[in-house]
Length: 413
Image 1: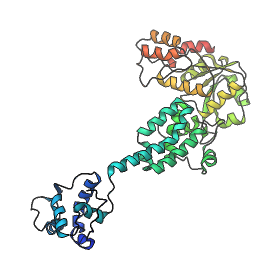
Image 2 (image 1 turned 120 degrees about the horizontal axis):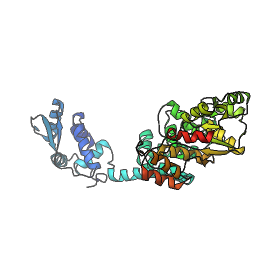
Image 3 (image 1 turned 90 degrees about the vertical axis):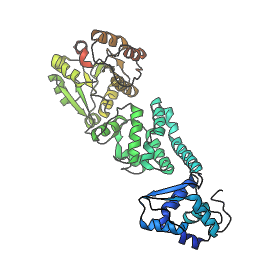
Image 4 (image 1 turned 60 degrees about the vertical axis):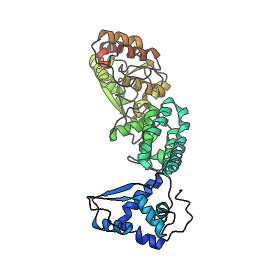
């Protein structure tokens, strides 16, 4: 019988004296869980290590001792019969449980309705798929990894959270870079809306990684650079870029004359733009290349910019300025999956041409060192040379920039 459609009246006063005893809460709870799961109210239910009060209440309910073992066992069909015979609940235990605890909500339909609500909550991020394949993959992953459910718990809260995240990601990357608090205040109505530790910051950062290709990581420094990869700045001083032999300010000119590396902050680049004094500027991934160029060539080295991993906001601002000023940008990085991701992330933001960074260059370097470290990680594409991915998969050797340093230094002379 459907427990929500009983028609015979329940004698609630007598019911509460008999089955409403707190010492029988465990029994009522077991019966309710069975009803919610559409299971029959028959057979035994047991309670381990019962108290004396629970034994006495069970004895009063059944009109006999339920036994003296270490556990307490009561048959639900026997309780149902007692309630019907006594007239307390003519429709039996199901109607009694509903009278004591409220209408029974069947978990099957309830779960289906809740799942539909969750799917509708995620729908708001589907439109982001048009902004790039990375975001489409991110949206699919977000549906399945449980992150949003852990952060907010309900479909309604998830819909609000994902709506705000979609609003933020639709406005990124910020170009030119802007202050993170100012961006949050303008877009979300509060300067602290994207503060560390908030659910919105957590979800948005995961989306930024998909948007910009920024690598996974942890810690305050990583979060600062992850925000900066999308043009959102914690401050103007913490984002920097390493350079050699760029000119345009008295300080840069002095360092270039000495052939010494310079570290430029985003603040410096915004207030004192670098002059475009060379037709081409080379870009490397690792500081060891720039240091070797300074050691080998000093002031005679060709201009060089080092990303030191993922391109920072300062690096992007500098390279964009050089590109807009007419300088050709030539890029080299590690021949591994991480290196290809960094190069792809940069290519999405600033045009560049490969500098000894093609499939042919990789094959030559890998065949020269077949005993090099094995390639690991998740494969990715190389938009500037589709054959490069196939070459890495075929040879399976990792080639770091330091391995081909002599060739790079020859080009920088």
